[in-house]
Image 1 (cartoon, rainbow, N blue to C red):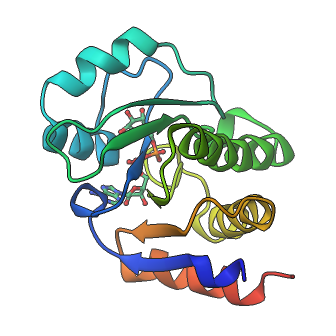
Image 2 (cartoon, rainbow, N blue to C red; image 1 turned 120 degrees about the vertical axis):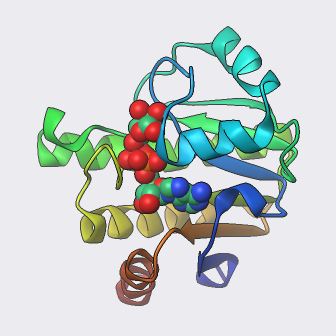
Length: 174
Ligand code: APR
């Protein structure tokens, strides 16, 4: 069952013991603040050396590096939309693509467990409730056709963020 493979939790994505964690990066893949900064700090200096070789990463696309000092084997770098730069429909399309292209990368490298942060809901100012609905729908739609991924964790940095995701998962159709 798809919904059973989606786990919502409050936590720090850099400590997750999963095959791949997803980084909410920017187009340059040069690191930054927020979760991007936390992941680079935890992975160590080799991460940016590899990510820069893969740059740029278009919004909605995803590129994979090793995890270095992180517990995760892989870091899947994706770039979510900067909310105010797009129409609401385009922003939604790009956010869903960021989740689904990250999962495509996870399948490509053979990752069975994947952890996401709440992409675009920080610096990129995507409204949290709307972003949570898009996140759970995009992940569920992908998992419906992909059985190789056993677990997708949505690792929220606050109880409010987790609550938005739990409500979205509960209300999700299908
Ligand atoms: N673990 C899990 N989630 C985290 C962590 C962490 N250690 N640190 C922050 N977050 C959460 C934030 O609270 C937010 O809900 O990740 C979500 C995404 O926020 P940002 O990191 O600001 O990412 P985003 O909104 O996608 O903006 C990306 O910010 O850091 C820069 O280089 C990055 O330019 C890019 C932009």
